[in-house]
Amino acid sequence: MSKNVFARVIVMIKTAKHITRIETELRKTMAAKKCWRCGCFHDIVNTLQKSDSINTPLKALFEDARKLFEVKRYDCLGCEVCWPAVAQNMAAELDPAIAEGSHCATAEPELQQGWPPLPGDYQVIRFRAPVALCTLNSDKLIAELATDPVKGLSVIGSLHTENLGIEHLIRNLMSNPNIRFLILCGEDTQRAIGHLPGQSLASLLRHGVNEKGRIIEAKGKRPFIKNLDASHIEAFRQQVQLLDYIGETDSTTLRALIEETAVNDPGPITATLPDIKSVPLETAIAPQRLRLDPAGYFVVYPDQSHNQITLEHYSNKGILERVFAAADPAALYTTVIDQGLISRLDHAAYLGRELARAEQSLSSGDPYVQDRAAGNLQKVKTEKQTTCDCTSIQGELCN
Image (cartoon, rainbow, N blue to C red; front, top):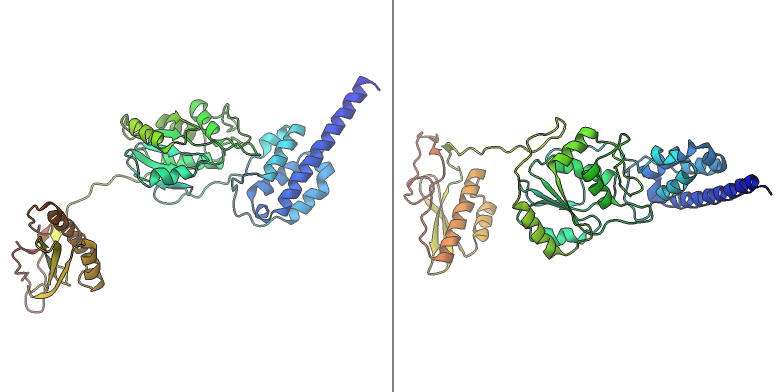
């Protein structure tokens, strides 16, 4: 047998083995109902059918697979083992064009109002803080660090895929100009499909993407950014400074790192892209007018001798109607709300503030003088008169 013939035989054997392995992975997919409605399955079947070298021997299998297609409900679930993706990896060894033709379907995300604009496995701590923490595959760190938040931490979340997951992270962080640092920590995801979101995200921040949207020097199997263009990537790289601590899972170490990083906060970034919407900082306006609550008003007394707060409720004609007492301010405001003795939100806010001050007086022993409510009292029209007839001297409206 000549060398050329022998080489062709070897190629034919390798091809047959690859085809068999592709078929095995696709049959696993077809047996999993969750895959029937997943964009990964739909996308990869469509892509493999376009390759003559793969479609010819597997044509019947692809036809059976398409019969299982359901209306797509999600693009990528980040499964521990993605059988369609494994099949694609094998197919790409036979036809390299497949590697560029499909990669974990990532549909254009639907943005929502507010921040963050996209859903995900994260917990918001404080909008106006400079540090974002990505725990990668170490989900338990979210609970450990969010339970007792660290000063300077804005948001903490996990990341499991190097395409859709990174896209969501970029949009969420770019829509908060206060975030200037991104700490990568936790265990990166090395699974059968080769997802390495941490390494891929770090590569994006260091090197950007190429003209095809592939993250430069990323080692994951599908590090493609489909729904963000080069201007988004460059703006993200300008906004966020990377702190690469991949592999670090000690919460104490990470707490110290967050605090140290926040000290160097350069302030909010000013240059933003037109399609990246943030929540604006609005200046609150002090109340100019004060309106009586039709339900009446309250007088608050800290009773040091009984270690409790007394709350007197008056009608707007200055008639005492109810008296309550409790050591816990929450018991007082819950009771008066349940009793229908407050009908205005500004009145409820005022009462909550005064009860907190009274509680502090009980604790410290400092004297307490009830503040009047903010704003200038407006005339209130009744059946017989048009002036305020509140007669309380120490009360919340007149003093």
